[in-house]
Figure (cartoon, rainbow, N blue to C red):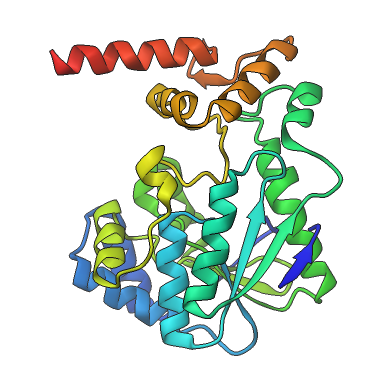
Length: 287
């Protein structure tokens, strides 16, 4: 398997068949049935031209579905996995390798070898809304370097969904389902119109192996600490199941002089405050 120390540049929209674009937009506004959503995704993937196809696989459920869909329809694809150095759970890494082996997909494992996530937190402060340096430095940079090294050719398939957040719904209006990244690669988002229920149904029907960290923590573990995971119960479970990871975040928090690891609008939370807040809410809900 290829190891590389390596998102993308300014985009240009790539047009798909008009009826596909219109149907996907409709499903983004009002969820379509699972069967209709799957049919649209199959049409999107079949529209991919020749050349290398890379599927971004984080170890999460959305990217698992996209990897299996692309492999089933196109045959030969490569899984592109980006480890966040120092912030990716070891079970996430093991799971990604296991899935690639079971599906018979070549895995390309990228990571920064010149910096570590929590060391940069101490230097630069916590990432967060408007300060997503973690995405730039630990995801985009390795991907950019990889595509520069191979001439930037190919198609990149990603598993983002518009229903995950209002912000993501704007993507499809701005960039479309597919767009040119400026590195002579085309980025395609074939399940942008899917719901969480669609993803879970596909995984169950196709008997795909689930990441064990979902059952343990509720997340994939590609980023153990994430400023956008605002559920303190996640970090409470992390403290109980993987105390070494919890202590790592806690120790870094003591070293960072300015800011807090979690921000929600004008409110700021320490790790302990976020957990206490979520436990109080959980306790109130169970009464």
